[in-house]
Length: 167
Image (cartoon, rainbow, N blue to C red; front, top):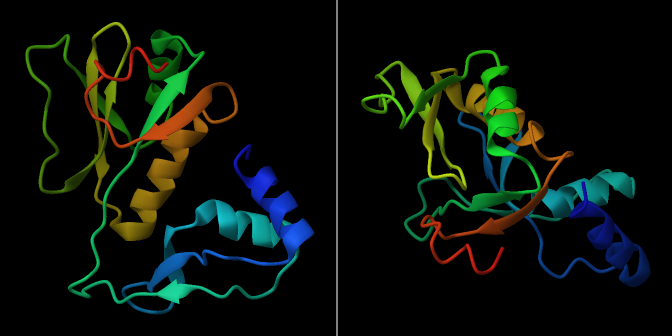
């Protein structure tokens, strides 16, 4: 992961983790913790062979906890190639704005992502409800479609207009 290596080098040189990852216990506490923020720091510490990690642990229902999403801007990958790769993911359904409407997930499905392509198309991604870990697995499958073959950046923007001049 291109984001992990600079963190790994910094940790090797300084030996100090200034901003510990944030996690929350899994619902049944049997699967450990879910990393809410700091996945790249966790990966860097694993690369360095640390058996334990100092982390900030928050209760999932803490009134001060606010979860926000971020979005990927995927660069240097033609939209048709991205959509073709996404269609290969088992359990993932794609609905396109080229159709009459975009199907919203049923009660037995979860919304995974919305894809907006540079050519103006919109795709809704959904999958059968497989619980938290199944959802994380599907999200990982989505990111793995482009992670190694495209450049990406993170943003909180959801509108493409302000992003065009930046990218």
